[in-house]
Image 1 (spheres, rainbow, N blue to C red):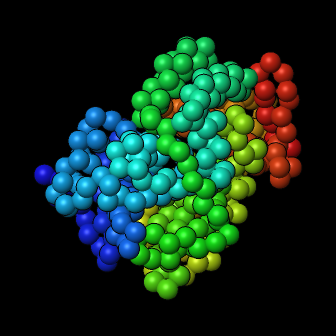
Image 2 (cartoon, rainbow, N blue to C red; image 1 turned 90 degrees about the vertical axis):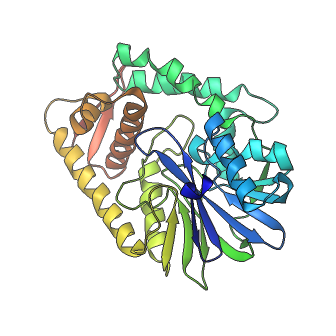
Length: 330
């Protein structure tokens, strides 16, 4: 029954869509407005999620043409993936920030050109090779990275959100707040009069959002994320609706916790570099352990790189550019 997926709040419905371990589900949100229904972050495409959405819409008495818009916080497959499927079924307009649309094109290709993903995969593999990933792990990456295509096809046609202007959907007026670090052009949507925020993966309860250095993306992702956390922490949020886990109320406190978490990680990482120079991969394995599957290892190495770049920006470490790049503390 679809009811096990659905939780109703004040003029807001959460629908949980399945995804891979360890997160298990992603939160999609449905809001009804004068223009029709809006779905925020419909989830990754899979046969199971298509069936789940069909059941949810049937039980709620909603036809595909009643979905007027799909609003996306960012381009990652677990949020963006079903946008094109919804658009093809009912003609929904798909909205995201300009930076997020560019990241989607770079990572996954576009509605008219599907070649972008292959180039991104090759650049990712080369980035990890240059930062010390072992050959047996590098060999797992082509199959792993190619597996995301099925989660994001078909690609939607994108309408760009003007982040300097409020956007109206679901019968409510939202202020888009753009922050980086987790994903280029990530948007949270803040309703000032009620203090509600749809915060995607910018702020999550109990877990820290992954901050990744990726090829062709933000050159200073952790700096972008920390700056964004300070902006979000200054909002008067009464309740936050995140992309993962359950809605929560201690939003400002949570932003402060995440800021402290990353400062602690920076200190710990610099301490690892006090002896001989080390590759980012060596630092990653010491920090996160050597038993991660390739999916989690990719996140861990990209996060390690984001922190090393931030330490370098602060003048606390430096790198030696060789065939395999190494880092050492200053």
